[in-house]
Every structure is written in structure tokens, then in C-alpha cells.
Image (cartoon, rainbow, N blue to C red; front, side, top):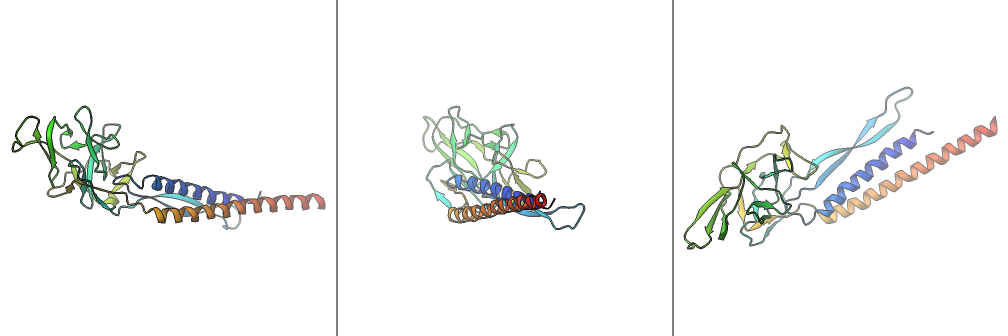
Length: 247
């Protein structure tokens, strides 16, 4: 069988995987704090007997696009838009610390502060619980204060401080759950000073127009690879027929 078939097959496979990443990006155009998935194709030289003329295509994880998304004013006092390179600490499904830029927060039926996706939001002392209140406020440094239920508006009570860390995106990796973790798997330290703006969220940084154009480009590349597969197969069949006729 022509080895070119395998070369075309790896190209088609890489195109399909890249399309899957683009589909994920498009599905999260409206997800707060979402960072676009990046992929890159690398050539892989096939070694062995004969001339080194075969180069396969391999798709590698290119990480994520760390650029900021648009800031959207919501008026919700629990929504927070984080400053550049700031990340909100949340609890993953294994109970470990992870990070996100999704600042659309809410309080569940148990009084626990969670993200829209249901992740518990952390302070330095663990998950944050907000008691029944008349109003809630998040300060620029992440401190959460409330007016307790039944109290006068001038009565303020601090209930915790969001753990917001400042981390270079190059030192983070994205997990399969969409959360970020440090490359060394160690928890980061809290950032000091003003780290957020309340009443707003950061939108997704996915550009739907660019994503659709890239999707079309990848679709054409996949079709081209499939065409090469068909042509290589036809060439192999023709060569086999000629050998039979000459024998």
C-alpha cells in the first residue's frame, strides 16, 4: 500500500481534531471568562529504511488564548470582572484548588457561593458561605460584606474574601474540565490590592467570525486530504492491476 495514504490520513485526523477544538470554542461564545482553545500542527519525520521522504502531521495542544474578553456590565452585585492575569480560585470535582476567569457568581440553596457551572468559590480558608442578607457587596480587593437580614443598612458584616491569585497564563494549563491549574500543581498565593470590578463580568474571548472562517478552512483541508487518500488508493489498485497483467 502507498505510504502516502498514511501521510494523508494523519493530515485528515489532525484537521478533524482541530475542528473539534473550534466547535468547542464556538459553543462557548457566550460563556463568561472562557479562553479560546488553541491547537497547532507539527510535522513528524518518519524514520526507517529508505529515503526520509515521509512526514506525518501531528496535532499538539497549543494551550489557550489568554487575551481578555469584553467587560460586560450586569449590575449583579455578585458578578466580578477580574483584572488582567488575575484568576478566581474555585474547587474542582476532586476537592482541589483550580482557577477560572468566570465571574458570574451566585448563592445556592445551601448558602454557598458558587460559579454558574456549580464550582464552589474559595477563600483562603475554603469554600465561602453567605448568610441570609438584605444586600451583598464585593469590594475591589475581593472582600464580601453583607447587610444581615433584619438589620439596618448601616450594619455591615464581612463574610469572607475571594481568593484571587495573580498568575502568568504561561504558567497555567487547562484541564479537561475547563479549569486552569498551575504547571507545578501547587496552589498560588492570593493577590493583594484591587483585583476585580463588581457588577460586571468578562465575556468569552472567542471571535465567532474568525472561528467560522477557520472552520471552513479546516473543512476544505480535510476534503483535500480525503481526496489524496482516494487518489493514493486508486494508484495502488492500478499498480496492482498492471503487475497482474505483466505476470
